[in-house]
Amino acid sequence: MGGKSRKSGGVSKQLISRLTNANYSGGPVDNGAKSKSSKKEKKDDRKTGLGLLSD
Amino acid sequence: MTEKQDWGCYLTNMNRLGLVPNFYCSKAYLYACKATLLEVEGWWIVKDVPNDIIMLPPIPMDRKNVGEPLPDYPIDIIWSDTPGMSHEVLAGIIQGNCLEPHFLDWQYVYDPKNFLKLEGGQWHTLRKNIRHARNEYPELYLVPFQGYLNQIKKLVGDWIVERKDTIQDAETIAEYLIFNPPDKCEIRALVDIHGNVKGVLAWDYNWKYINFRYCITESLPYLNEYARYLFYVSEEILKDGRKVNDGGIVDTPGLEFFKDRMNPYSKTPIHSWRKKV
Image (cartoon, rainbow over all chains, first blue to last red; front, side, top):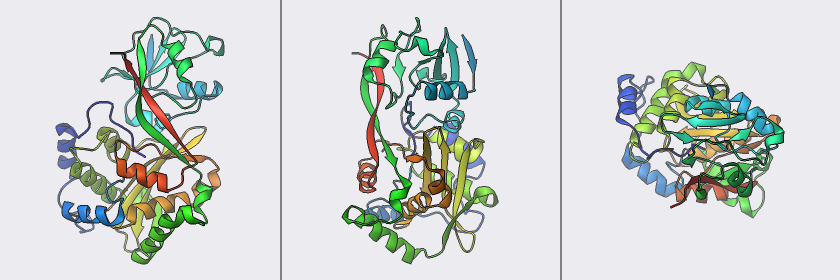
């Protein structure tokens, strides 16, 4: 799944701003659940061998 | 030369010519990444205009031009070739542009029927992980996304930002799942019994494959693997009858290991064509 970038990888500042300004990133989600911390994700990566490989 | 955004012309002609599509060949994906279809002297060219990149192999509108070279049209890059067009044929089409193939990514294709039983040693790890997942998350369901839009957008937005330095094709992901979902795609939310969204899955189609475009989940043990499994054994995927194009590994060795372990029906290299140095 997912595709490769046709230009260099990473996210543009414009997209970050767009997501943040629309409240699609940062802060709690509507149902009150918090997003997972990066520390937790790294632990999960090791445990499953898959972790963040969602693409 | 004319420009439009009706990629159906390109995809239909590809089918007529008997070419096997790659992962980027769907109306939904080409819409989300804002590709443009050019008509150049009897040939179709799909282009990422802002980046000046030809995304797919040029193909002739008329079958009688198969094997002929593309009329004079300068090309610096063809982003992705297709498994159905040999290097010799593509080199013949773009002769004069001095391009050569470079590995871009793998293309994994799976047969959904193979996920039904998970029997045998080759399925050992997946079978074990699915069992763990069922114990951890006994009640998770794939449901239509409409009632969960805000949660989905938040999940995907956070997922993108958390990977801002390494993620690939982020703009297309954001268009597809947040800002402007294509008409020609399917999006499902992975929810628990309390209505909390734990993941989002999206796919689209071409005449040959179901393209499993995105599987984004919370980073919990076994959850992503389980979400993929639920997709493969869902009634709508099994009934469809087409095999599933699960794309590549986007430069992630761990993902290659994972996808190999899921026993692909086929694993084919896809190449970019760039100027010879």
